[in-house]
Length: 202
Image (cartoon, rainbow, N blue to C red):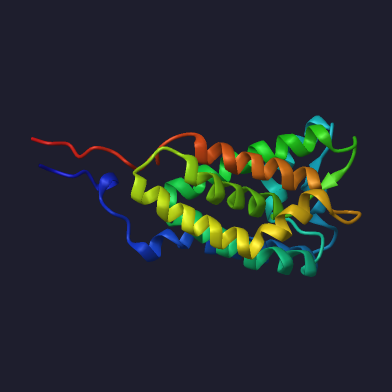
């Protein structure tokens, strides 16, 4: 029996490289925004503007201030690494689904012309993924493990997440939070991990 390279186990530390690199990119973009003329914030999601749909790609990398980025960094890294435990491909698949669902929901529901930036949609999406992963197809032992992780995550971030949707302050996009979480839940319920392939036998 031969196992193709794509089906071989991924090194545990390599799995966490993706969320770390994505967070590093956010910090690099914020630094560039601070030292270069103008502002990158205009590349965010501008609701009801067709050109603003490009913000679905750029908005998670952009932040209104250093305080905004710092507030997102720790939960992004913690929850992103929990998603990345399942592998690099799964992490990026979940990230894309969350960004698209969260971005489209924000673009549609927010008031026309509203500009939205920040990684909080991804944070809420990863939270939704980790919690809903308990109900996704898989081995009973794996689902029990996810249930334990979900309980811990809810204990740590549940109150913050609820406040982020139902008790947000002015200038905070509850739309991005809500639809990001919906995207994460959808990614969890979509099925088995894409990197779970059968070995090829000869």
